[in-house]
Image (cartoon, rainbow, N blue to C red; front, side, top):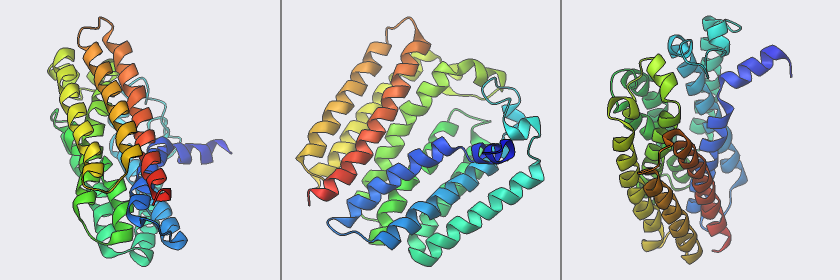
Length: 287
């Protein structure tokens, strides 16, 4: 891979693409319930992947000023001008058109609209609010909660209780996930004057918030079984994972090394979202 191609690839934030598409696949299999439509599946996966990539490139363009002030982002291609702003906008537009074109042509209007809502929230609303308020994290969580709903609605073409629960589960998961990042990268956020919760309210207040959101995540995730969308295997494993995550958050309340515990919280949040998505897929094979 040439240096320039790699720069364009990294501009799309591939880690975000893969993780979000994976949750969308979970939502898709939850909705299929014993059936599988390969063409629809591929259209949803690639359409959503292109849309997320487009949003990330637009976000990189908008944040290039902020990125220049943070240690972990100051070498991004738009900051170093390896890629021009004009070319980034063209690249983002092509990706977006390709993504929405696939969803509109091969899924349904509802799925395309939900994907657009996530796209708009991430680029516009999150882009504005994260500079102004600690509530930017909540706004950002809305866009991050859209992918599993996209996967689900690509199959069902309707918003029902399962779609709502998927949305809530991802919102509640993202808040402690984001807060953990904000805690161990607080120096970077302070340098860029981004008002994340650990900076504005302190580490302890953020830890309390983590406990609240993890509790809500546990209840929301287990509700999929309560309302008969998933089986007992899902229920037991998600209960165990949720309680372990809660125990880590509880342990962090009195930990002296806040950043080390925040990293532990962050890495377990990645484990739990992978387990969650895998269990939704596995649930399909049990039907």
